[in-house]
Length: 137
Image (tube, rainbow, N blue to C red):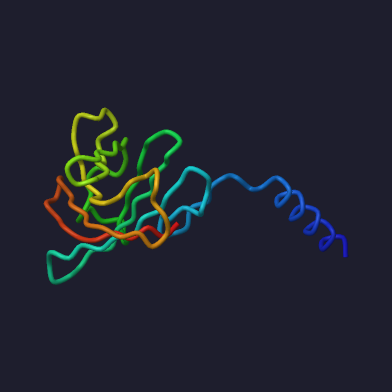
């Protein structure tokens, strides 16, 4: 009975606090935390597609990426900063941490308006891979 009461108290406290922190699953996708947008994608340029994910942190204009199986088929650089470039294609450019190198593009992705189920094209400038992306949260 004491364990159940403790569980209820902890649950109530966490719910009351809003649990604004983030969690990360084994696949690398972040929960629907304030300021984060999670994107999943798949390459479409070879017989064997490669799945990848990108987490966008709107609070500090940064990104992190990964691939299922911890490979580097799509990304060599796994994090950095991003900028939204509305002209000509409305693409978000994933850049190196110093902002001097474009790593990849999410065409049609606007961090300010992105919502679940939005889709678009993807291009990895590091690996010359193409594919598609979908916002999942």
